Image 1 (cartoon, helix red, strand yellow):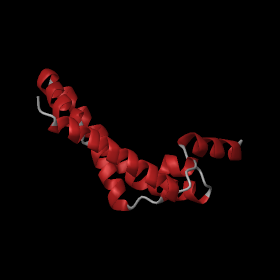
Image 2: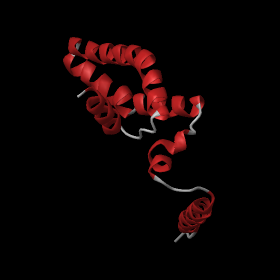
Image 3: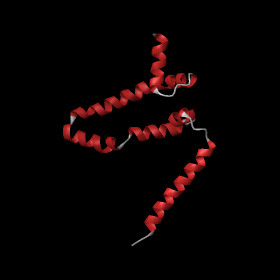
Image 4: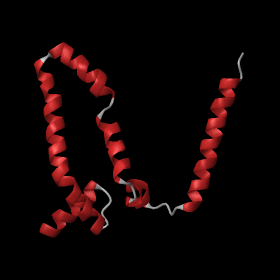
Length: 119
């Protein structure tokens, strides 16, 4: 029986645990830090996160399987992707600035503030 894979697995777990405990001392962990990363994500990091979210397994396997099985209705994938990109390009930057200015953390905070202010 080979012991190398078990040693590698436990070493990885141990290193992860040590890094997690060390990182805990440096930052004040509050709701803003946990949910939106302290608003410190750069544009490249956000782009990579969104790319990972958008181009998932569904895009490459599920979408192509659906296209093979149903044909025409899969144009929906292209349509909602294009519309989502278009709206996000214009709407999300002002929403981000407004949320940062008013210290809003989640979507319910955003809508609650706007509904309360107008009502």
